[in-house]
Image 1: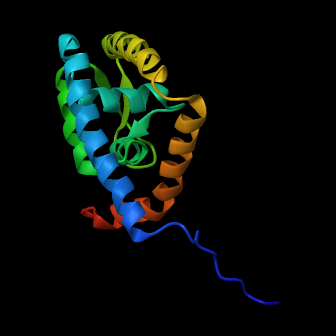
Image 2: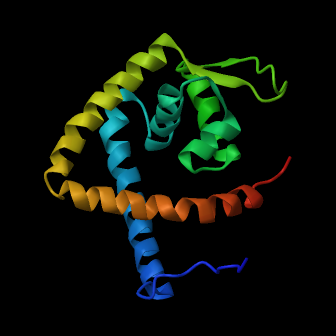
Length: 163
């Protein structure tokens, strides 16, 4: 049996990957600022909205590391926001039978209500944005970005403090 090496796209270059990466960085910064303004009337920030979303969209309660992984942030970054959400009464920490020191987080009724309000604001704005780009281009962009995640996520995990 002959071993085959993965083939690379002959048109992809490090420069194109850099261009895409810089665009993602710019978009991320704009989205965070834009999101902060969108949810500020609800007493949220983009970071806290992101944590609420991770919990709301999960099928089961999640730990801080799981939330961080789902949202592409470090465990420490997720934990900082979760602590603030706990203080606001928007999430509740529950015992984790699999790990005594890593609780599972769920939305409180107040958190569920606030997430639904933020989601309604987002849905209205997403509908406006959807008119700017053809559906095929959005699907292609999402597939492109998703194809890079498996190469980068293990690196994110290895950079985290193991303690």
